[in-house]
Image 1 (cartoon, rainbow, N blue to C red):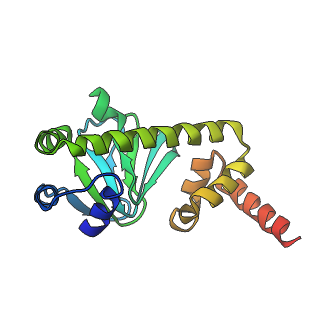
Image 2: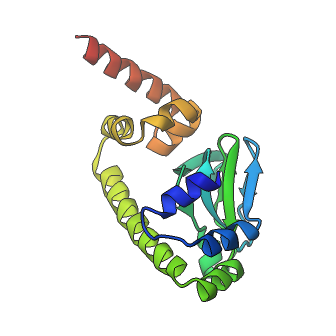
Length: 193
């Protein structure tokens, strides 16, 4: 797993052996089982997550129904709002499949940033990239039909189709599972014509 992490980081900054050792010494790697809830609505947390392997999702429970808002897969990070605003979480975070995460908090990050300033640069670059991706994703969601959303997902994140349960995928697309089944059938029919 560390090779995956350091390979990813090397796309942005180069690390010395001391810097790599410092990261490994933090004991921030966590293996978690499918279904593990990392954060519940109403809880406070300082934990941020970086997915090395697997998939986590954020969701709200509204009128007893889960509403998925995002999926995070390999080499994607999530810092829940409650970490930043120091308030109870408004949503849940859970593992969609068996997952390996880096789990950090502001204390760990400040320690690393003070010893190795390039990590702060790395985090800033990643945050800027993430913000841009989120804005594009939000705009596409707001301006497209459910079918266009599904086709966008097929094009940009086809891995989710295979690894995420259909009811979570439907919720993420803003439709019911039955509607997703019909939508898939229509697309298959169009492609066979």
